[in-house]
Each structure stands twice: as structure tokens, then as C-alpha cells.
Length: 309
Image (cartoon, rainbow, N blue to C red):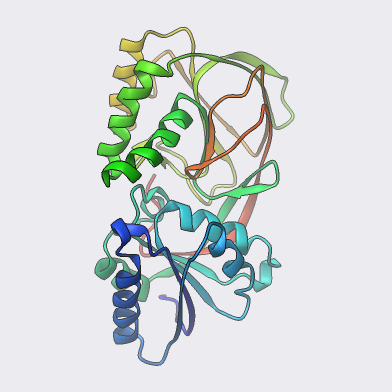
């Protein structure tokens, strides 16, 4: 049965859609009012980094928090929501207007303001998991190595070119395969298992299946299953072979290649011999020691359909 949305906080990133976020937020408010005439909707535009996190941390008086933008504003909102007691956290909805929108894909939320607003008005509530690394929270992805270097590069390319999505990620991947292709030595302990050591090219810890604007790095990952899917690409591997694997990963067809292993865990500790490129939901992360755990059913999300998997 669809949720009744009555008291909504809409947090919008004005920089999304090449600076059209404010206009899109106004359009979204009008569309939501049209569908829910008796709803109360407060719209706030973010003004500085981490502003969305601050707003979400004080949102306990709302029944629903909706983000308008990309994975960055969702990431901030989740970190703010997790500062509240579980019973005080409003439901989380998304209107995806960013460059990657991987969390929205995992929820099954359509892109575009009109379609997303229509989906939110008939959405259902679903408890989902939240990841935590070294005390910070992530909702979709945590990665190290080449894939994190690509994520960092996409930020700069997006600022310079305005491009977005899989095309932008593909351009960054080609560049990083040429200039940042190398292995990182690691030791990982998953749950209560024995330590595992190796060398990785890519190392992804996924709550949902997507990263990089729609690449299905862990095709079977689910936001509500109580475990991470961990995909590791092991060295040695040639650039040509890595490029082939990258192309297959767009559709989740890289699994089964001998260079890749897939594991499931609720808690992991990873130590690298030297600092690797690292990112969570597209945000940069630093260090060599990472303690990662999963909080089951931590947030209630609005979804128009079962999550993609």
C-alpha cells in the first residue's frame, strides 16, 4: 500500500543538472503539491559542503526527507539521518538529477523530476541497510584502487565538461587505465574468518549493485539483505584484460572471469600496505586501515518497485 506523505523536507543541490537544481526543486514542489494537495513541503537548497547532512540531522519533525540531486546529496543526507535515533529518522526518498544516480537505480527510482515525483506519490516504504566505514556512513558503494581512482577523476571531468553518467565514467576509466593502473597489497578479515592477503586492482564493497553511473559491479547485491557483496579484481592482470573486464562490468558480466572473486560479509577490516585511492558514494576517503560494518534495516526508503538486483 502506498505511503501517505504529509510532512516533507525536500533538500536540493542547486548545482545539480549543471546549475539547474534550484529550478528543478521548484518544479518538484509544484508537482508534489499537485499530487498531494494536503501535504506540507519545506524546500531547502544546500549552500555549502555537508549542509545536507546538517539539515538531515535536524529533520526528526518530518515524516519524509526527499533529496533532489545526485549520489553526493544522498550520501550527505544519510550521514545526517544516522545522527538521529532510529525512531526519529524520517523516510528517505530521492529525485535523481545528478550525474551517477546509482542509489536511485538500486531503489528502482526513475530519473527525471516528473517521473520521480509520480513514483514517490505511489511509493512504498522499505527498510534498507546502511554501511559504515571508519565511523562515516555510505548507502551504495565503497571502493579502493582503480575504481576509486576513476571515481575521483569523474568529479574533475564533470566540472570541466558537464558530461555525466556512464559516458563520463567510461572516459575516466580509459584515462585511469593508462595512467593509474597498478596493484595494491591488502589484508582483509571478513566477519570471523581468517585473514586473507593479496594484491588487488579493484576492490568494491557494495550495499547496492551499482557504481560509476550504472556499472553493475555486484549484480546480486541488495539494499535490504543484511550483507555486503564484495568484488575484488586480483593482480596480475594486463591492461588489455582489465579493459575487457571493464566493458563486461557495465552489464554485470565480468563475474566468472578468473581475475574476480566475490564474497559476502557483514563486517570487514581491510589494511593496505600503502594508501590506495578510496571513495564512498563518490566522496573521497583517505587512510590505509578501514573498519567496515553494516547496519541492518537502518533507514526506511521510498521505492516504487523492488530494488534492482
